[in-house]
Length: 467
Image 1 (spheres, rainbow, N blue to C red):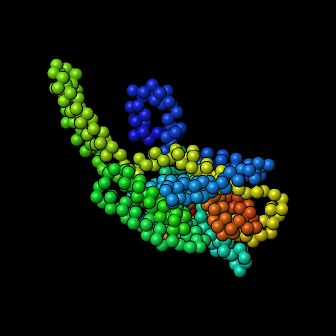
Image 2: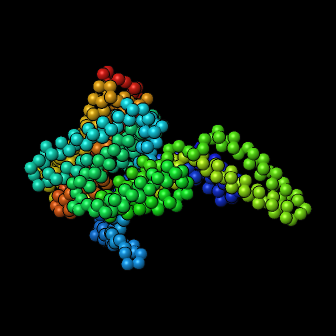
Image 3: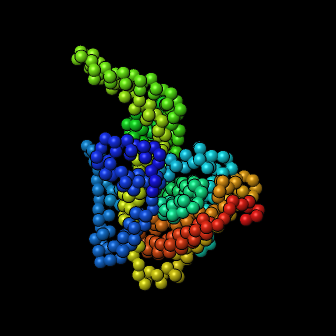
C-alpha cells in the first residue's frame, strides 16, 4: 500500500527529528492506507462464524448482548455492545463513503452529468429488480415483509473485492461502485426508516436537522475550528439515533457536507510564504546573535509568530475531506469494520436449518434477489440510461466491469443480516434468512470477482450498442 504524496512528505519530515519515526518509516504505509480495506473484515467474519458455531457460541453471543450504559447526570443511553458498534461506530464508515462520493461527483470521474447519472440509474435498477424477484417468491406469504433484505449491499466487502484489482482496473470502477453503494445504502436506510421503524420521533429529527443546518452555516461563514463541527456532527448523530432512524444515515449526510477543495491553492501558498520564511530567518538570526537579552527574546517571539503563520497557511492547503478520510480510514479498516463483523455475524449452521432453507421461499427469494437481481438490475438500468443518451461510462470502464460491479453489489451480508433481524424480530425466519444471505453473498462475491478478473485481463471501453 502506497502513501499519498502529502502523507509521504509528513512521514519524511518526522523522520528528520524523531528516531522512532525513522524506525517506523517502513511500516507507515500499513497504518496509513489510502482506502478502506476489507481484509480485516473478512478475517473477523470468519472468526465470528467459527465462534458462533462452536461450544463457546452462547458465551460469545452473550458478550455482545451485554448492556453498556453511558450517562451524564440523570440522563443516559443503554444499549447492548453490538448496538453500540452498529449505531456509534459504523456511522464513521458511512461518513467516509459519503465523503468519497462527494469528491467523485464534484471533481472526480463522476463529475460530468452523464457519468453521474450512471450510478444513480444503476442504484434504482439494483433496488427495484431484486425486490421484484423476492416478492415473486414471497408475495402473499408471511415472509412478504422481508423484501428489505435484498434492498441493501455490504459496501465494505464489495470495495474489498474491487480493491484486489486496484492496479489492473481504472480508478473509475471504484468510483462507480462507491457512488452506487452510497445511493443503494441510502435507499436501504430509508427502507429501514419507512418499513421497519415502528415509531418516528419528530423532535429528534428536528434536532438533527437544526444541527445539520448549523454545519452548513459555519461553512458559509468560513469557520475553521474543528471543535464546533465535532459538536454539531455529534448532535446530528444523537438526533438521528433518537428519532428511530438508523444513525448510519447521519454519517453519509455529514460526509456529503465536507469540502472537497482546499482553502488555499499550492500556488498561492508558495507565493504567500516567501516573505514569512525570510522574516523567520532574520528573526532566528537576531534570536541567536543579539547580545541584548530583550532583543533576543523579541527575535524568538517573531520567529514563533512566523512559524505559526506558515503552519496555518500549510494547513489551509489540505483538503478537509481528504484530511478526515486520511485520519479515519485506518481506524475504520482495522477496528470498526472487524468489530462490526464480530458482533453481527451470528449464523448458526445445522443440517435442519439447511434443509428448511432449501424448501423456503424466503431463502430462495433472498438468494435469487441478491445473486441475480442485483447484477441484472444494475446492468439493465445503466445500459438503458446509456442507450438513450442520458448517461455514459466513465473513461476506461467497460460493460464487463459494470456486470462485475453489479455482481459484488449482490453481497448483502452484514447490512442484509441487520435488516433481516429487524424484519423477522429474531423469529424462525431470521435464521433461514441469515443462511440465504450467507449463501447469496458467497455466490455473488465469487461471481463478481470472476467477472472483474476477466475484465481486468482483457476488455476495452465500448459502446452499449456494440458490447
